Image (cartoon, rainbow, N blue to C red; front, side, top):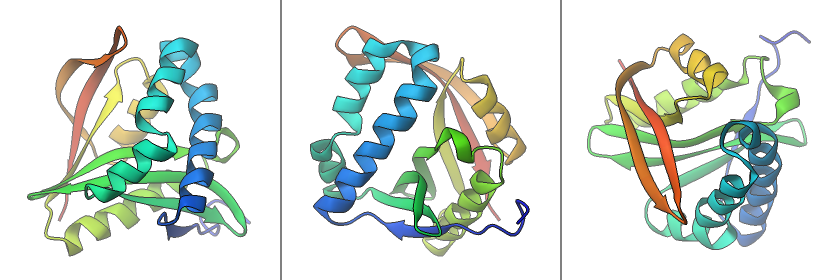
Length: 170
């Protein structure tokens, strides 16, 4: 199958077992992808703070939505969003390393754009580490534009040094 024929299925994260599966996937992806960018210590801090079972459960209780991406029976990635007035905040969009470059981010963006428009939102916005060059390229290819840069203290002596990107829908 070529990349245009492989379709992923978007399955909501709702149960403690699904949250645990998502957290395991997050650990795999974040350690591989972000360690060269921000270092192992910050990766572990952020996993605990933002992608632990308790953190995900709290986010779900506060309006976040998460979906796992399935290719057949295999979980290959996930996304997390938070609806806001007129905008959808794309908090997480991650694919396993062996599944990147196959068109799955484009499929996820179509899914999220449809979700946002059905909820009356007119744009999707996100934060991305300013040194995450390949991911920034992907988002630009998907139609995102830079709005600004931000550096935010996330505790533990760590900062998120990000670009804020937005894509208009419609």
